[in-house]
Structure formats: structure tokens, C-alpha cells
Length: 284
Ligand code: ATR
Image 1 (cartoon, rainbow, N blue to C red):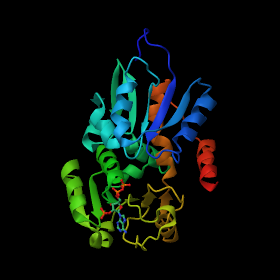
Image 2: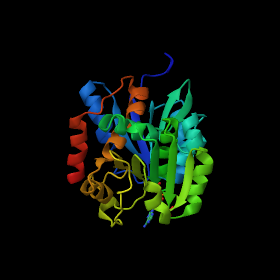
Image 3: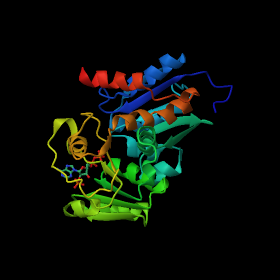
Image 4: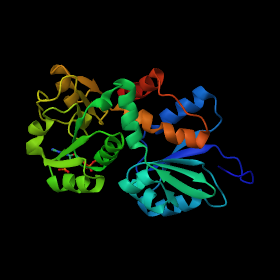
């Protein structure tokens, strides 16, 4: 909590480099507007060499912000430079949400929250899937693995083209996570109730291989954390194979909720007009 001696500020940011394509200002701007909160949320383009100063300035005498979001390429540095990283960001080695409390910079990572909240909203009961398959072992995969484990999914399989990266994540996130090379994908899918794509395959219209989801359990869900395009090649394939799908846009929207609540004191809702606002922006 800010103490009463501090000047009242109600401004938050998203910091990255480059930053002009971030959709976060649309999301937070919508919530500020619809909740009638006086405040702002702005893009801050900060080069890597200037990032440490940006963080130091957050708690300097001339305070401009209550906190903000962090995106590429600063997520790891934000975690390292924060005074109080929480356990989630510590395990991931990356933070996407910062806030000031008692004059210190606190940090967390809300990507995992966004991932599970999206599934909770769209396919309640998804977490009864005893077995989940996560395709990809990059930065985005980490938050998904952490969230699935913390939600209590019994058996989680991470499949990646570069096996060593999958093995590293299995070591990091504990005994429920099992690593496999991409050649084993069809076999690993057998009996799973949830399939998550975290690779960049199919992003922005790029080609994606045809996957056979036939081995998934009846009623299984296929989701993609890529949301451009909204219907990714993997989601279209899964639909053609008669499976339920969840697109990744909701993850983007839900990951923004905890930060907004910290900075502005109200828990915002992910609603249909917000979703439409982002879709309209994507189509422009
Ligand atoms: P992010 O942080 O967005 O997850 P990343 O760290 O670059 O990005 O990871 C991209 C993921 O997509 C990785 O799992 C990558 O596999 P490798 O670890 O083998 O590189 C996966 N990926 C990208 N292009 C791929 C391709 N053509 N075939 C299979 N996997 C691919």
C-alpha cells in the first residue's frame, strides 16, 4: 500500500522494446473507462541498456507510476531487478507485472494465471483431465507447465523439437513433468485430456504441421497460446477432428487482471466487448 505521504499517482505502464504493437493499453484503457477510474496506462519504450534506470526511477523521489507490465525483452531483467519477486516469478526467472509497495518494487508473473483462467472461463471442468500434453519448451511453455502443475494436473508431458530444453523444464518443474522429443508426440498424446500448443508454429499465418489428435481422450480440449490468428492451424485441425478448442486471446486478457487490481484497486472483468475490442484491433 502507498503511504499517505506519497503523492497520489494513478498511472501504470507497459514497458518493452519495441512496444508499439502491445495490446495491453487497449485492455487496461477499456477497464479504466468502463469502471470510471481516473488514471492512465501508457506504453514505455525502453532499450535494454536503459532498463535498470527505469526500474530504479520507479521508486525514486519523482514517482510517476504505481506499477506496470513488462514484456519482451525485459521479463528476465525485471525479475532480477525487482526488490521483492514472488515465488511464481522466482521459479520462472521472469516477471511480467510490477507494483510498488512500501517503496519497493514487487514482481510476479501472471501468464500462468491467464492460462488457467481462460480455460476455467471457456471449458469449466478442464482440470479433470488427468493427463496434459504441452507442445513447446520456450519461455511461454514455462508458465503453462507451472500453472498446470500448481492446478494439480496429475501427469504433464512436455514435447519439444530440441529435447534438451524439454528435459531442462522437467527438471525445473518437478516429478510430475515428463520430457519427450517431438518424434514421440503422437504416442504421448494417447489418452490425454488436454493439448496445449506453446510453440510459434502457425503464428501470424506461418505454416504448421498436421497433427493427429485421434489419440486424445474423449472430450479432450485443444488450446493454443498463440492468438494471432485467433483460429490457429492447430485449433482448426482439432475442430475438424471433432474436438473442443479454446483460443489464446482469453489468456492475454486474463493475465492482465491481477496487475490492474494491484494498481487501481478494482478487480476487472474479462467480458465480450473487451474481447471484441481486441479482435477489431487485430483486424485493422
Ligand atoms: P516463446 O518464449 O514464445 O515460447 P521461444 O523461447 O523462442 O519462444 O520458443 C519457441 C518454441 O517453439 C520452442 O519450443 C521451439 O522449439 P525449439 O526449442 O526446438 O526451438 C518451438 N518451435 C519453433 N519453431 C518450431 C518448428 N519449426 N518446429 C518445432 N518447434 C518449433
